[in-house]
Image 1 (tube, rainbow, N blue to C red):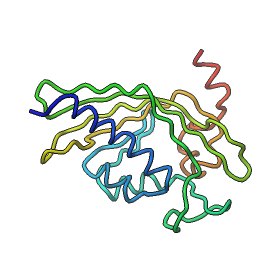
Image 2: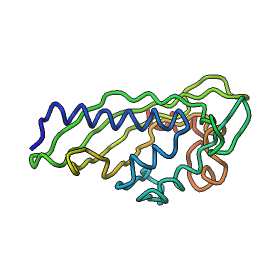
Image 3: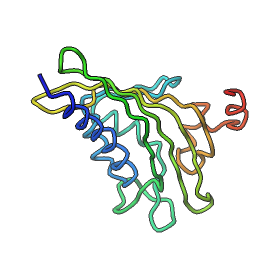
Image 4: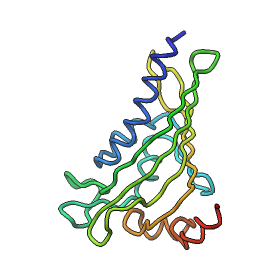
Length: 176
């Protein structure tokens, strides 16, 4: 059995490690965090599991270097984003080896052609498992609540297979 307070801190650390890795353009770290987890976005049929599928899942993210679009594997390229994760609530399972967390996120982006602004906001629902004395993700479901201008963040192929970014102002009004 793990100490619940220490477990909650370690799990919060995993949640924040994801946003740090993605914002800094470290997709190797992102895929390592979700190596043993399933990732999906609610309302989209794509589900990723394991390093290869998780890496492919994030292929839709546009990266930049020195103000220009860049390949994801280009040294020092990033998605020009800042993820703000808040309202993190962690519950340790009665068995002491599973846990769930819920949190909210807002993604800000600034790049050539896009002034600093919030581009998407929603909720993460995460599950975790204790493996060899360390917590790790076992599932992440992302729920999209508000959508702004994603044209500089996600590639067109991804945007076309989803409704993300289409008519976002009416989506926001419809939610009120």
